[in-house]
Image (cartoon, rainbow, N blue to C red; front, side, top):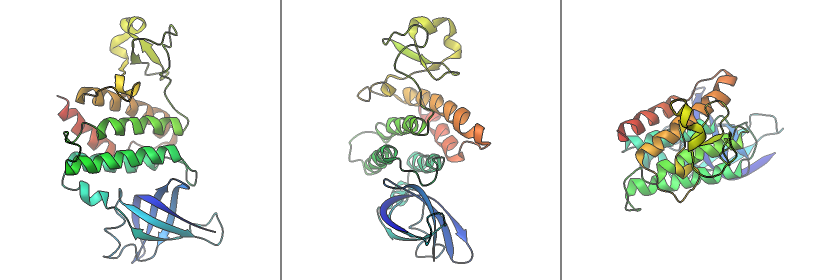
Length: 251
């Protein structure tokens, strides 16, 4: 069995003296692991950094085997983000979160969303978009997390108010059900609800730093409650580093 595809490096760990076990994510094949011979060498270590793009070729005699992977370097997003703590935290968080997806299952929408985030990360780093570093990519990263919940079967229901069924003035999310709640219905319980930023409902809406913090608080709660805790695992440390930066920026 063999496949070849452009892929995002999610993680790499040494195996033996010279090789590495590498996790990649491609549009056609989802998350895949493989043994990269020489992956722990001086030549390949910079290529195998989480967040970099590669052209990966995976081979195995049987589909259930770990397989051997060869990689050709693509765009080095990790190196580009290295000079900015927020960009690096965002890139690291995205790669860490993608590792919760089931192995060997394609998620083309999730891959496409991740590529949009990477594109805006690169523009923020170089200043091509003419905006501040976090104006575009951080709201996109929040939308990526929402897509991640949906693609793994734990999406939020933001279509209408859980209490009344109305579709207007939705400004809260129930921390238990993950459903939207309107301003009027949620007012008595406002201090127990999560804020629902408008940009999660309307991609064209503006997102302030406080909006982004509220979105990441909301999505982090459900990622932890619905994905990580049931599997007896913890949220990635990279995600917490990102939250620390976002919290400081929103003060």
